[in-house]
Amino acid sequence: MNYLSVENISKSYGEVELFRNISFGINKNQKIAFIAKNGTGKTTILNIIAGIDNPDTGKVISRKELKIEYLSQEEKLDYNLTVEQTIFNSDNDTLKIISAYENALKNPSDEKAYQKAFEKMEQANAWDFETQYKQILFKLKLENLNQKVSSLSGGQRKRLSLAVILIHKPDLLILDEPTNHLDLEMIEWLENYFAKEKITLFMVTHDRYFLERVCNEIVELDNGSFYTYKGNYSYYLQKKEERIAAEQASISKAKNLFSKELEWMRRQPKARTTKSKSRIDDFYKIKEEAHKRRDNHKVQLEINMERMGSKILELHNISKSFGDLQLLNKFEYVFKRGERIGIIGKNGTGKSSFLNIITQKLPVDSGKVVVGETIKFGYYTQDGINPKPNQKVIEIIKEYGEYIPLTKGRKISAAQLLERFLFDRKRQYDFIEKLSGGERKRLYLCTVLIQNPNFLILDEPTNDLDIITLNVLENFLLDFPGCLLVVSHDRYFMDKIVDHLFVFRGNGVIEDFPGNYSDYRTYEDSKPKESNTQIQKKDSRVSTATKIKLSFKEQKEFDAIEGDIEKLTAKKEEIEAKFIDGSVVGKEINDLSVKLQEINILIAKKEERWFELSSKLEG
Image 1 (tube, rainbow, N blue to C red):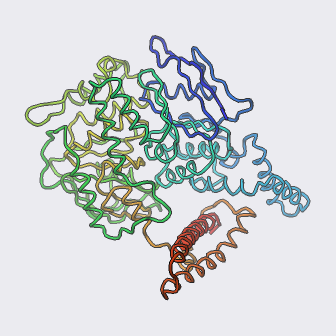
Image 2: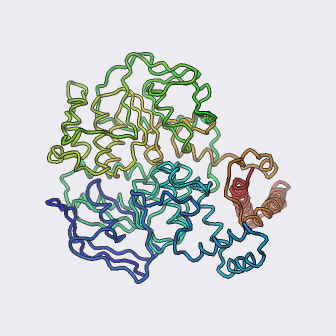
Image 3: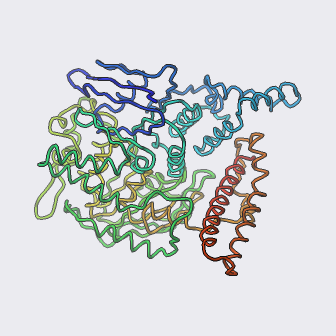
């Protein structure tokens, strides 16, 4: 079923033509990713589809009464409302029924009103809807329903905007970089949610694991032309390489880029399952694999950076707190030459503060940060650049450096570095005011790299960068011979660039893991699941802060879960006993093995759901 058709649309701004005569359609249950370079009109096309902007020529035709929700980069929230009021501020009939039921619960003495609200919940089958929307809020860490939108952080407001459109369940979801401002746990939840839900998506994202695991079609705007690929990211890479080879066989550089990317994709593990296929319990084995990945890379850009001395960076028993929030607790680490460390953890666990401590922008409460005399930091922050009025692209980069020295007396000039990062000679003489948000981030990266640091610190460098730029950045960093410390929620980027991780657990706990992000997830998934007895001991998991209360249906579900787990555990033990005593033979072995796997998955799901519901209770 066709939801929406885009017919021959064109758009120009002054003399700059973004695209011409573009046509495509969006059908029910399609999950389409839209790929294009920064500054070529991605957001403009999203705005045209959403009805916010109009094309110069052509038209957009949609089905009658098609419900469209659009998550844009610009906020459209009412700062005077609370989180709960924002959720219910819509024409969704089911939400109105739930709102009436919630109000009836607050006035238990009015039995007539409660009975009427309860019956409407039953008639509309609103229990499942209520459970689902509260689970969405819980997963996106928006549990305080009474908090005013005006008091939320920028990241929280972005997550609230995402929650609103997911809860409203439109026919078509249009998303502009939905994973920005989400931590890794939230991204993986959203990825699984989109992958399993029957939902129609049209989105811009640079998250390549998202593209691989969620999308069933990719459309690309490249040099003003539109291309369609009926598959996920791996399929796109393969077909794009073939297209480039057919169109311009002489441009081996561009062709080679996608060839390398496809080769790397094929070497990666598939999306993880509920139960890891292999138990990894030897950290040294993981470390060995991580070093193999690094050794496999052939250095092409031989940067001649300033020599590092014997002392690089030492952290001695450093601690840092903000009030009751402890970020670091006597953390120790001595950096070695060529280390490539990724930093992961939930929002608010102190990742950016840690980078500011290392660069001595933020003092420690106790302990000592010792920086070697030869160390030159290159620090890419989330703040970006602050250009002067009427400054041109080439002028701002030359303020930081004229060239990067290479071995054998060679060098990369400022102009050549800009070209490498997709600013052609004409674009280099444009005023910075003309650049898109992604192009500004790209330029900011160049200003950091042109200073030729020997210790690079990158705080969320992948935000707002297109996939082509990410490939360029990754290739540059793989050739970079110095130390690298990266905070990023881009799992693909981390897998490709880092050798081991600092895992920020919260409350000052930091774990050193010797592998990349996929290694870490595999290891975490291979840990034995906790028993029901262990779950009951974990009262500390239930926060004393105000949480979302359980609905009537959730309370019934919560009360039944423990009994369900006990029954499943008994069945599991019964099957395991049969294997131990050798009473099963032939086909029965295979049947019982499948049954045992199903039971283990069910137990894991029940335990996870128990944690979710218990976390909503007031401590």
